[in-house]
Amino acid sequence: MPTDFLIIKHLLCRAKHHSTASHLRNLAVAMCSRYDSIPVSTHLLGDASDTSSTGLAQRLARKTNKQVFVSYNLQNTDSNFALLMENRIMEEMEAFPEKF
Image (cartoon, rainbow, N blue to C red):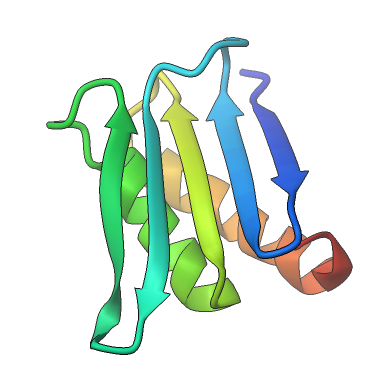
């Protein structure tokens, strides 16, 4: 199944859109806080009971130490598939740090 990754780079934050569709259905934001080791996150758009976007935003915020917006709209909710996708993003972050 083809999956789209769209990365929008800003000066102080990163926006990521992971989807098999071209629209934002779930959108979350996360950022590091000096008061807690776990990045603060909130759901901005979509079903708040779906924590895929917020969880991924938190993990990426921790890795980049930046504010991260994530739209995670994949139909396949298999945890192995999600782990593969996240690992692929991490590979891209290591290979091309200037893009993140």
